[in-house]
Image (tube, rainbow, N blue to C red; front, side):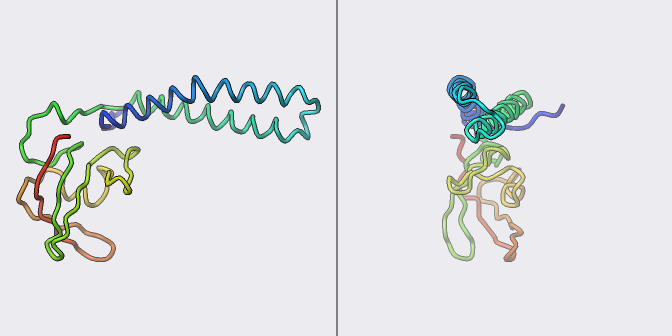
Amino acid sequence: MSKVPMTVGGEASLRAELEQRRKVDRPRISKAIAEARAHGDLKENAEYHAAREQQSFTEGRIMDIESKLAEAQVIDVTKLNKTGKVIFGTTVDLINVETDEAVRYQIVGEDEAEVKSNKISVTSPIARALIGKEEGEVVVVQAPGGDIEFEIDEVHHL
């Protein structure tokens, strides 16, 4: 079984979701199933079938989260030496060489990636181009619209 990198925040988020599903969602769904059963004929009982489907989804998600947590290698970049090198979990300030536009990305695990929050997957083209590079270096990211050059302005261990 190979370990999958995950940030401390990603682990906390998964643990919170697991807690919610186990302690809140499970009992609520069980209660809904019991109420639907009380209505009689289960063959044509839409409430019962909807609750069972919800139960199936919730149990599947619980197993998925447990599996991800079991395979996770949690990396806390705040405890690592600051070398100016881009590694998993660091937050990187980039400057587009062509437009001078600044952008900040945090490199996270695949399940944590959220473009709206500027969290990019370690397997994304940008992250792959950045990993191992240092502050001041210019990297070329191969994007669908063509190559983009970024200068690594600063690497943060947040």
